[in-house]
Image 1 (cartoon, rainbow, N blue to C red):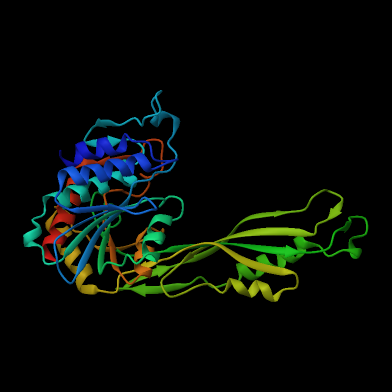
Image 2: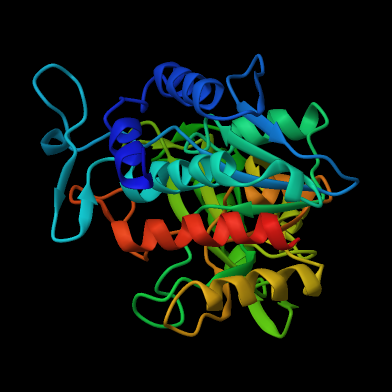
Length: 359
């Protein structure tokens, strides 16, 4: 079974509400088709290990997907998968069952005796729910020395070129809650208007400087934005509560000081989600992967920065030096016409296998 056929099999399995069946397929295939030591942890993450050595390299991905568009589901509930014009169409083709399949085939085809490291394939659960599977794995002690994460890195420097991402932003989502005292709107002076207090907090957020840093000569710039506001109970009541949602794109080593809003009376700040950013700190590893990527295609790949969080953030938190190399191009994932280039999937297979053999 080649990468295209394996991708088709894996993509056809629904995994937006429950990824158990997809995990079962990955686990069974690895047990049947490889000589790896395969295990499934209590969270549903699937691991497969071959080779020996003091250094560990992980080929990492995830087998859950976002909910499909109606056009991507058959009447029996299975996912529609179509092959045309050199591409495979269907929910999860680009994000990211295609590169999970490429990594599975790479693990199958390497010669364990020729490896200078332990090679670990891992497919995490619940990436789309906030990278929960990789978070649990890291908390349980999973910390390879190096990792190639198969999220999209194609088309960043030039169309069709598979680049090597050496950093990505994280996301910290938080809520500012302003408390006041309710009163009749005809006598506003007898209460404390929570919306006014929330407006003062919004002004604080608006004036914050965006965090930024440098990774291997590339600027990684974050952002902070108020994205939702909710307050008040009736047109004639001074509101006693108002909530403001803040989206921050974090960068390695830097955070915006949003906690300053708590210096205002009646205002508190809580963090709802904190997906770590990633920065590769081993330039030699990043250069090795870039060299492999260059040897695997006609284009000239570059080190690039991704704008959004992946499982690489949790791995980096554990001390793993990560890069992101994958087939998905900007704008392909999470769409009604999601697709992936079959040629680029084969390219990713070659990159994954070659990195393992050269490390």
